[in-house]
Image 1 (cartoon, rainbow, N blue to C red):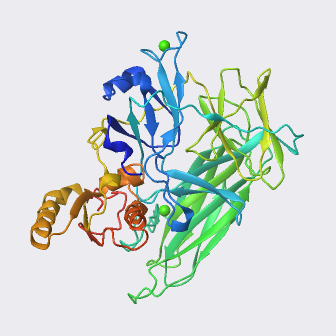
Image 2 (cartoon, rainbow, N blue to C red):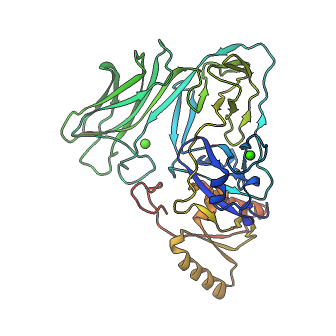
Image 3 (cartoon, rainbow, N blue to C red):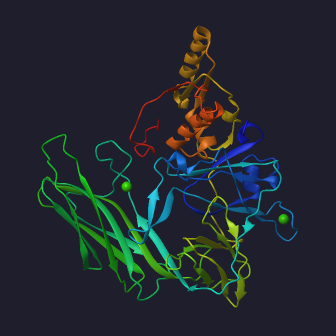
Length: 468
Ligand SMILES: [Ca+2]
Ligand SMILES: [Ca+2]
């Protein structure tokens, strides 16, 4: 690609805080600065963390997101109408074969995902149709894996590394964590995974209970508290099963402190329950671990649906696919291959959904930029906005004194084109790889990279600092 998508046209940057359907009205599109909302399209991948392994490939520049465009009875997109799209927030779920659970991961560098809106590129794309199966199902699904988690990111133990911990157990040694199991299937156990850490001179344990029933303990190794080269704290995890009698689930974590100088921290609690596949509210995300397997053909049956409901397949959230389900009464059913884990969302086109933020700092109308159009600079200076003036001075000095071809770019510009506007260190690596590839692998393009700024363990700016 010789030029970036952001190089021309009118672009608005927006952010989302959670995964799910998001809504923008015709009026909001006008308000955010789109002159021609009838041709709105949305680009980006939200808070999808880039793979650190380069071999897993990467997306070059921004990709379009399929839209649901609600045009109303006149079949023209105008005042009173709206668009819906699936946006990816900072929480990512993956099925973990080892634990047999879906585990959550927070985005390492951001609490928000970002998207870019533009007009003038024709009407935004709609999702393609998912491939359904005509074969007899091997599995029928009427309940799904319900997912929830608790992870508080308050403490960075030695102000180093990207892992943060939540509740501190030193004075208060026990804490309750309430969960609500929406649509719980009676008699089905809930799987609970807990990750905790402790700094203690001797081995210590956390006790885990639910509704006063002991579920087990998590043992954490002791460390040498008096030597500064010893491991500061050890982390350990445990997995527990509990069959709740109510839709409320209270998990209690207690640190069995062996001495006054021992302390513990909770990292995360992950909940996998089982809920009826029945639609209430405006949107329902669902998946089924039990029917995922080689050769499986699965019939999903969603109850409490009606003909207005839309179901998208989200296994690749960048490319939602529309599911042409069959409706009998209030039962929407569809059959497809489930060789692997597939993710779905059902939603109501007229429902209320959060709107992306387009008015906070750093959002809204943005300047055009074209990092893909930089050609072959000899030297690149990458800087936060804060040092842009100094970076430009240095670049000018190199041009005049060394005759070098120097380009100055801000880290935000790199994120915009290489990680959907969401901070991600791999975006910088992928940006540099673009020059490497352009040089045909000789490394003769962009021979020098100067990074300006300071390092920090606080990648998400949790402590109010500017990430750099
Ligand atoms: Ca209309
Ligand atoms: Ca954490």
